[in-house]
Image (cartoon, rainbow, N blue to C red; front, side, top):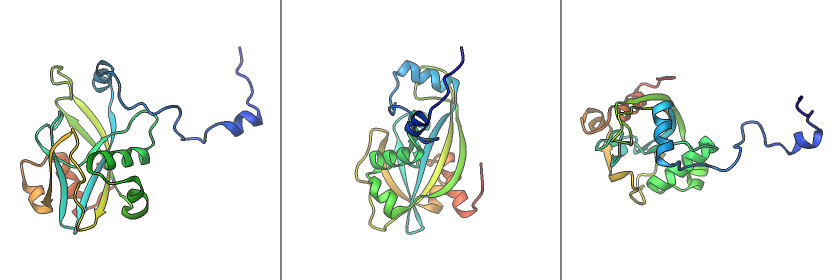
Length: 189
């Protein structure tokens, strides 16, 4: 059986190449998500939020991986969600930066793609590691900016002087790698 030849009408009504297909699927049943974590890398957006070129916003993580460490805001990209949509969702849900601020004022700067390998996962009872491909972006915020709220992922938010965050064992190594690269930009890590 051969596939039907597309007509001008079907081509014109097709979504643009690269456009999301179908509904955004954010929350999988835990068993399904555990299978994904065991089987494949996750793709995430991390936001390096800096004010006065001297302080970085870090949240103390409630959940695995990196539980208890201070870490930049971030999260995974959901199925059928564009990178821009993910960045806007994460910025708004974690620290209260609205999508219009992202688009019109803050203008995120690309830091690079990073790989994060963790020995544990969200499912502490399972011996599964976690592999992230993190797409990091820099956001310079006004001096008066404070996170609007605390989300379920973080115990607290804190502004860290950049040098103190680089030197502290409380700040996760992967967040520190972003800060090192702010001082010495690179292409890919």
